[in-house]
Amino acid sequence: MSIRIRPEDCRGCGRCVEVCPGNLIKRGPDGKAEISRPQDCWGCASCLKECAFGAIRYYLGADIGGRGGQMYTVRKGPLVHWIVERPAGEPVTITVDSRDANKY
Ligand code: SF4
Ligand code: SF4
Image (cartoon, rainbow, N blue to C red):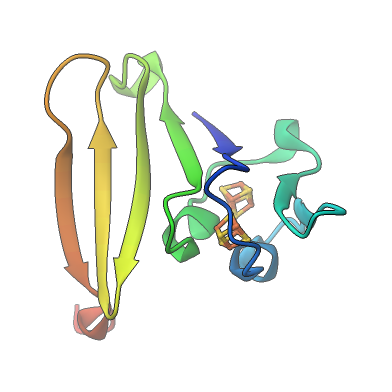
């Protein structure tokens, strides 16, 4: 598993910078997010969950059956759409209502 931030999709909102428990994400000179030490990322997915714009991609390695797939989120109001794109096949979307986050 690994994380990559796509500068073309980053809006510079800073949410991922705030939530990374390892302080691994910084803002570059253009205001866009960058991972400073990707080798130290342990894949907690906090940044992924906070990025409303699908700019953070979580690559799913072969060790968990990902076979080169990637996962990202898009947020619309309280709804968080978790999208998994596989190398071959249709994307799969799982929608979570964040208002339900503490119900379980
Ligand atoms: S949360 Fe997403 S859009 Fe906001 S700074 Fe991070 S990568 Fe960019
Ligand atoms: S997955 Fe977790 S540790 Fe890795 S960059 Fe994102 S918030 Fe930081």
